[in-house]
Amino acid sequence: MEPDGGSHSRAWRFYVLIPLILVLLPMLLEFGCLLNASMCLNQQASHLAEMAAIGAAPEVIEAELDRCRGGVDGRFAECSMLHRHGDAGGAVWKILGRAAGENDATPGDSIRVRLHYDHALVLGGLLAPFFGAQSDNTVDLDALVEVMRR
Image (cartoon, rainbow, N blue to C red; front, top):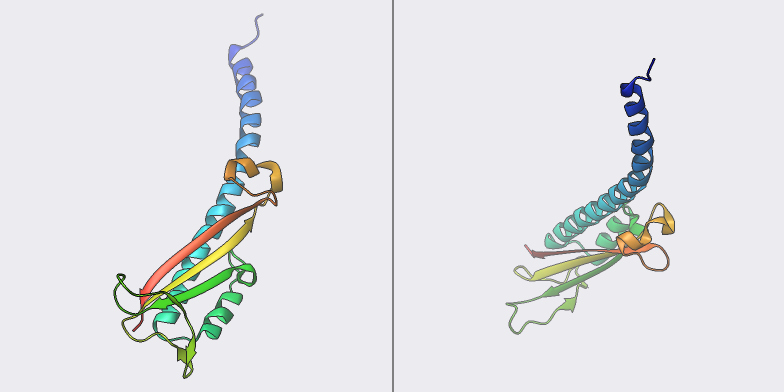
């Protein structure tokens, strides 16, 4: 009696599929975490820019960022807020300051909120070369949003 070719074929697929899954699973996990952090950073930048657009003081905006704990720990994110009056031609970007309980941008000014976050890879150095990580196994993530002061 000859062995069944079907069971032999299933075993071969099993032995090929398991290593393939074990190779792809860590990459998918790392990519998913990196994508989540990037999306959270962009969403937080949009939220902070909207706060600045309605006149929130820089300290209030920073405190809101510090409360962020989603895919990004806001305590470790760097935030810069700039504003300029007029068109892009001759206007100079200035650091957003405080004036009378609000920010010092006047209605019609452009406000730019930039967040920077060093995302630590979940699996450390295992996949660092694939994601362009630095020597400390972190990937730089940036989000930039520009709004107009209301």
